[in-house]
Length: 366
Image 1 (cartoon, helix red, strand yellow):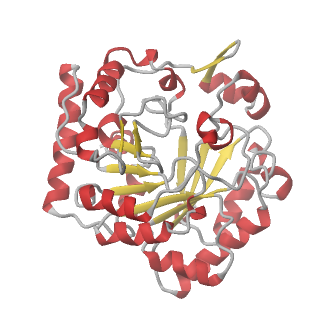
Image 2 (cartoon, rainbow, N blue to C red):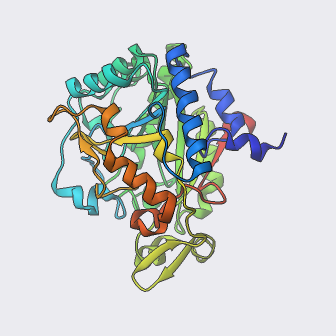
């Protein structure tokens, strides 16, 4: 059986072999209810693809939940800095998250704590992790690494039960790092990596799996060997290399090499599109959904300005299960199935790309 075929079984950029390894680390309760829901939603996805109209059984196995859209950095292409939501910032309340988990926690497999913003800015974030773990859910977050100031904080993260943490660090020295992570402190991130790695060893825990994410820009592409050495030094688990996402031709000129622009993008005046176009299909509309800090439910993280709000939880009595199958969500699925390129945000989306936009490397294999 080919590795490419197996990789498709994960429905993500995570290679099959890496996914299997992670099962030894992640703590998920494989209950009959959770497994049956997974079977139903995947089956309905394939039925929908076959008949070319949306059929939805069950709820998504993966839920993206945004702890906050506030961030301490000023990354120039981040929607938290330049998007329309910049004027509407806040933090998810713990009681709202608990209500969401009480409704769907026994069905979903994974909660992704991110979207826009830095999760650790929300002081209740680790309480959310702990509550999700009481439901038997796998938990994962992504951080810029500026909020693990002490060994005690590192141990608190390990003891929370967090299954995976992704550190975003796109450079191997302060000069390169701050070209994109504006306002960031490279040495502080390094110390955070060290603290968390050592805390995991002290507490004899496999969790969280630590992944170091490196977005490849033209100004740091010569540092790949250095970042591999750094990841090995701190006994991390994974490295991921991602292609930078740009929204304007000016950003492409500033951050992408000529080779990256040629391989990935089609640039026309003030417009940026994926070179290969987008298929009239998206797995995310069955496998994932996104709940922002304010309760708005949107299709995915590519809806950076919340242009497609299906409803709002927490305030008007709406439940996620009803929103997931409501008329607005179904209209959006029909639009994507019939003419996805007409949805502007989809034209710069990684879903359905011929090659994964991220390459994941297991450090123990190197």
